Image 1: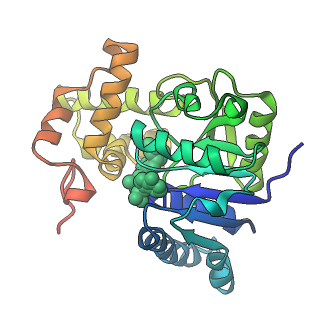
Image 2: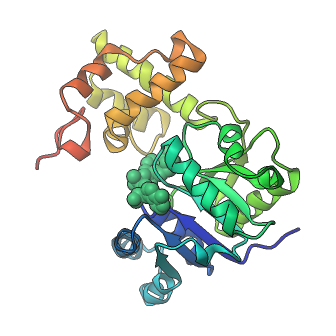
Length: 286
Ligand SMILES: NC(=O)c1ccc[n+]([C@@H]2O[C@H](COP(=O)([O-])OP(=O)(O)OC[C@H]3O[C@@H](n4cnc5c(N)ncnc54)[C@H](O)[C@@H]3O)[C@@H](O)[C@H]2O)c1
């Protein structure tokens, strides 16, 4: 089986930077590109705080911090990716942006480099059409969860033409960085978002019907179901505008069972988006 040695990440935002961290924490060297060098550096700088938290929680050794971060090279150039074995794409969830990134990578990366996209909602089979036909077999989805340096799960999603060897390669990469990959078909929402949003929609029905409050539903899920965080605290973390747009995509694909509830639309209209606006289902102050 092919070995992974060199890894490139495109996008140094919330997901890209943390995915880079997963690789360097396991000893890999990573080049991480954003639209500008400043943004790439900013993405790397944010990881200091992430590692400090991990140190506080006893999940990481303080003396390894500098050498770990040193293994991330921020860049604004595609050239550095020419001899990478794996590229992970985590740019905006926007077709044109992803198309441009994959066209650039396809013209620079070596022929056997695997391309993995972290998209949450775009079909992998569609994104695979953005590379030349010779590379389609080496294109797949690798859906990490936020915060990626903490969450163990990765959904590995082959597209229609992904070769079996590429799936094995990606599953193996995930294991090498301490993740637990599961193989999932290329369907809208993959597996986890389907499970998550069906629960959130039902939770919103309970609130609309006055059956229970958001606080009590969070308590129910934590103490009755063993969830580490309640659905309303999690919705406020992921933000209600994103939650609504994901439910709209799921609704378009699967119909009535994913129709977003009016109470969620109202929250978005009121700009109660969650932690990022200081108020969502709960209040967070300034
Ligand atoms: N946020 C989540 O919880 C989550 C979870 C799983 C998957 N995802 C997916 O991961 C991807 C990234 O999401 P995010 O939350 O990290 O977004 P983000 O907005 O935090 O980061 C995206 C980054 O991409 C950069 N970028 C844009 N165009 C670029 C280009 N041409 N070249 C290089 N960098 C470019 C932006 O400057 C930004 O830093 C999306 O596809 C999203 O659907 C997000």
